[in-house]
Length: 359
Image: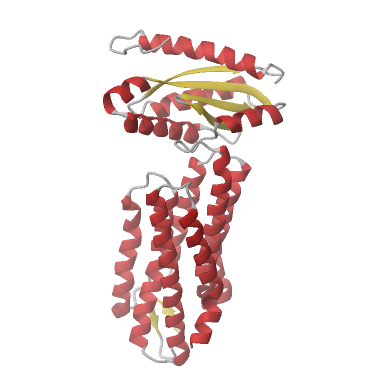
């Protein structure tokens, strides 16, 4: 049995070990995220042992009650693991994301006695109850939610979309392959999820050289590289400057100021499209580079940004520059956009109660 355990789980153990070592040496992730990833690694390892124990009992045809309990754990653990991945990788997700998975967990253990989700037939085979497909439906829901949240938080560049697509493929296999290869998929589920997480983590680390550590937006270095090497398709720029950041830093502290910048960055990413790249140049200065867009597209983008920012307690000044032929010099476009943006800023500070801290 030990030999079979090693054969079935050795690849997964090696990957989990490599993952843990990389996390131990990384300086790019915050402590909370690292601890959550460690918890995922431990959970995936324990899950692999539970799967092995359950199917060993099935092969031996013994302890059907114990097997039912292990089945309840397995059916419950899968959506809980995906929910925890969402909680770890997607920023600012409320703990309520676990509620559907916890409800399923209760139903799974009720099923041990009622067969409402699963039961074991007289021949030892698995039988689905009236809610037998609920675990798959819930995993599908969580998988779609994970991909959606990661996509919304991304800069929609191919280098970011590839690992998200890889995660999507991994979770899609968890919904399709059980019906193609049957119970044997359970043996490869853990290593499938481990590989997907490992690939996503490696790509995330590689992307950090071009991303701003605080906001997750593309950084100044990435902006200059982009406008230098990929100029021909750029025909619009949107420059954005936060209003009142100094007041927040002076009265509430720099932590509150950082939170304000993160919140605004989230607004910009959520309202941008695949044609837009969002950068933080430094401080409270942001720029959006637009490719192959119409002036109406730019105006709609600004409308979406203003609408999204209005849902927060913050405010920002916005300007833009557009040239239909894409031949205008980038520096000239920035200057033109900044001029419009400072007019917007001046109008903001002219209102009663808005203290002016700079020109």
